[in-house]
Image 1 (tube, one colour):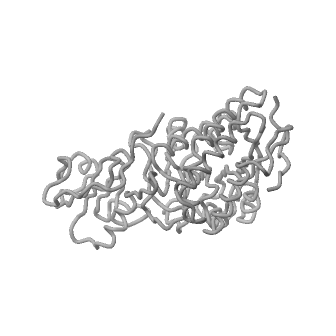
Image 2: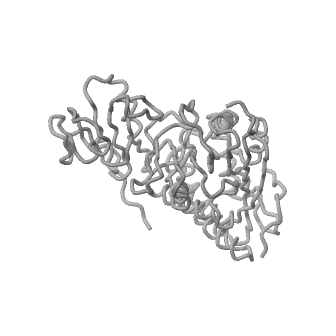
Image 3: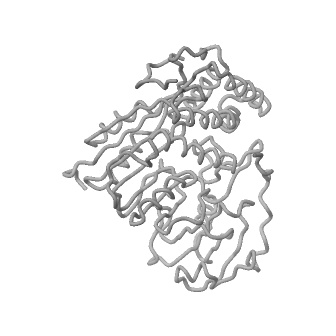
Length: 404
């Protein structure tokens, strides 16, 4: 792996609970689960009529499950089906008799999970190319990395000039929803929607924040366009980036803003560090990159984002390349803090980054992945590496005269 030039001045000086391997048995369909019955508070909040219901347990993780109600068409469509409302409330799948079983299966798959080698993964579109787990350990890592990214933006949640009342906001690939929630707190008049392939977002959120389960690489079907679209940390997950950027252009209003914040998979040192191609970290990254490409996934979107944004038709394009140190070697206080958290981010999650991808793409056993991960963690502990990687922020505007 080559060591790219730094894009700007270089920096100067708890255990997870056991995860079940099988889903719980379905309760008898003649009695609602957990004492939930027709006409309960959740249904009344939607002003839905009482209906005959079939209850089905769908996950051993109650806080991470959505309530799916087959509702009258005039309630308003969600992005996946014209007669479904999705709310993060209870661990029950409600079905009104008479709707196609195929639709039931499709919607229940959105809130189910898969368990592989001791980790939990999304169940919706299990053939999708998202290789990371979605369990508590991974969600904690995502929240930590949100803090790291915010530090590198000087405490800001965004760089696009969206004003004090940004209007309708879409957070693409929202993850745990932490960015959307922080935006909801900061901009109480905004209407914020986050989407993700996994339903792992909390239910207690600001009233102006909503989440939906969706694959961002599918065709978008929103009936109302957005004033601001935010896309962050989707490296190693997307097959067709030009299509994704094109959909952002299509669904942002003329004069509206988009912002991308993403990465490449290159680590390098330009401060006299000891990192080189003999490091286990180098081999790990090479295997990551090669494995992702076997599935058609782009491992290094960061430096290519500006070109894709320009090709999509955006103007007023702004770019910023940010080195992210790994470790406490920088002298700058903020970079030292970000580097300390980033070191923990990588050390604690080598297996999470690798397990599914290496077993599927390279045919490794789980034990082989664990041995490799131990060697990589040992390498990360070397304070003389002085290693870093790059993040890229691009924000741009849709022309006011663009065809709407």
